Image 1 (cartoon, rainbow, N blue to C red):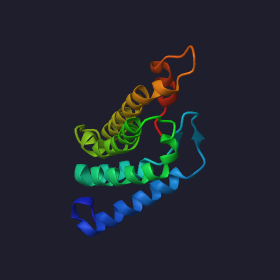
Image 2: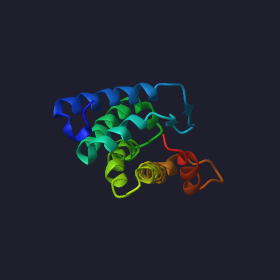
Image 3: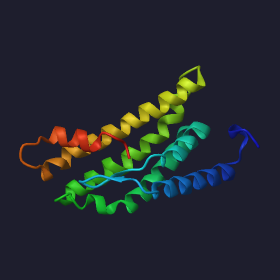
Length: 165
């Protein structure tokens, strides 16, 4: 097998497509559904992270962005709790497009560390935190529309978005 830096663009494109298919399949495995929409799927982002680790920012970001569009199409029912068109657009941008595109930065983040294990761990943790921030901000923006009495938008957004999907 060739090293990633010796692979043709076609081979990398095929690998990225296969990783997206694997990630999409993993996202369909039964998981935890959240009350205000969204869900937690445990390992579906790992194939996307692998593309970023193996092929860098350009391929990682491209793969993650296309995957975000697939996830947005799969999860459109989770934006139905948004009451306005603007909230729906922000929800799609923050919960899907930006949250998944961030995964493309895992490889370049990992490369900043001399120790490969530390770099991989840092890439996963930092991009996971970035995804959480996107979801948390989305919860702040649209979460106020669905508050129950006695709760705050900060609490609902944090508890609902605590685990990345």
